[in-house]
Length: 239
Ligand SMILES: [Zn+2]
Ligand SMILES: [Zn+2]
Image (cartoon, rainbow, N blue to C red):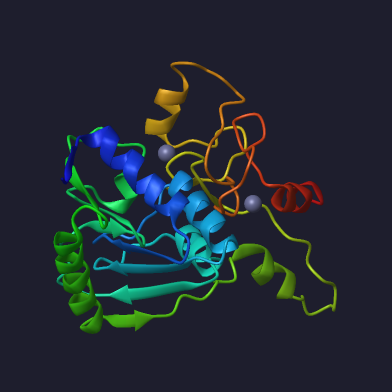
């Protein structure tokens, strides 16, 4: 029997589908943005040799997200502009749900879904799988390339007429550690206004955040006390 899932159950089972995948995981979601947790799960899966197939329908990716996706080996990415379905499956389990990929694990909305097991309900599973195949056949295969991020490269290439290499300058814009929004560059104020007000409820300078304030890439151990990744920190200090 298919199992009914509420918001938490849906998140939980999507995560399990990725963690338990042995050959292939298919993620169908109009919005492509990934939460950090989901991204890490996918990265672990690729290390096990799992092929990741993502079908999406709205292109609204931040450079950070593009670069992160570009780093996933074994990723097959497809775009279908009329996509509205959300469905996640591996070789044995499938979740059909209202939940978008980016809402996974940090969701305040009320979502629900159903969990289908290939063993107990092969017909249902196959029907949904075939529908995904049909969507896939009418989708465009997309290639994502890692974008050279910006700033340091530009400045370093910029040699002045006297032949002196300019040292990298402090960037004007940075990223909010938490929501990845663009904000003024200031390592002492690495949050946007909204995220700062949530941070300020606890004022924990070591609370783990998502991205480097400077380059906007996903970074481990990033927080108010240490808002820059090692690479950016060393470049900023060189000034
Ligand atoms: Zn923010
Ligand atoms: Zn950085």
